[in-house]
Image (cartoon, rainbow, N blue to C red; front, top):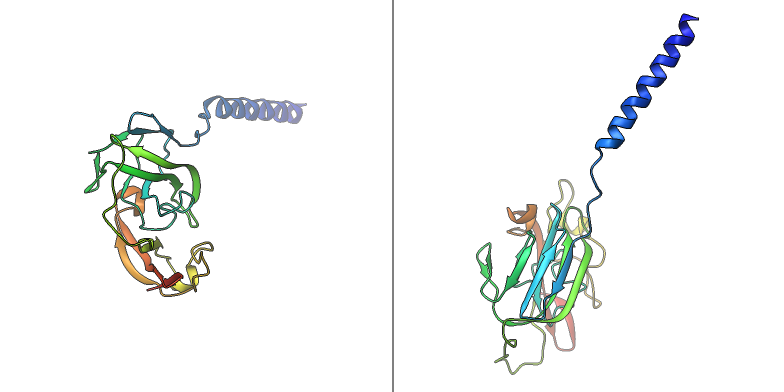
Amino acid sequence: MSIKRSVVAASASMGVCLAVLIGFAGPAHAAATVTDNGDGSITTAGMGASDFLFICQTDVPASICGKGLNNYVFGSGQNGTFQAGSVNAGRTLAAGTYNISIIETSTPPFALVDSLSNVVIGSGGGSSSSSSSAPSSVTQQFGLPSTGTCDEAAPEGLDWANVSSGGWGISWAQWMNNGAGGPVCTRTLGYVGSGWTVL
């Protein structure tokens, strides 16, 4: 009889503990979003600890803007409103037309959370003084692996536009560790002739 009471008491206390744990569980993390306010500014909301906003020139598609790359002109890991003149990590956001993404940066290949294309920041966008029709060079980066080489650890998807794999070196980048900086694997792609290549 006392064994049955012990089992019943133990089961009841486990049920209470489970109910307490479920009751104290916090709400799930909402997905980060970026919104074009239509007034020359954007607003981020729901940014988690590993979410990062990247703003890129329009020759960099929103789908790869900041995705393991150092191809952005401005970035932030904070919720807020950003407009021409906003400053973060030594970079000032200039007026212009941009592609924008929010990337989850905790593990390669860095998932795209939200994006916008051809967003005007400021009062009407910038003007290009370049007469060249070739796209700007693109710097690709991802976090330095704890073991192995950069060539071995390169995430799939970075060899876009028929670019060969390899060509990685080691550097340091501000975007790592939620803007605190850290070691990265890096390489630069350039548009040469009629296609992209590792420079």
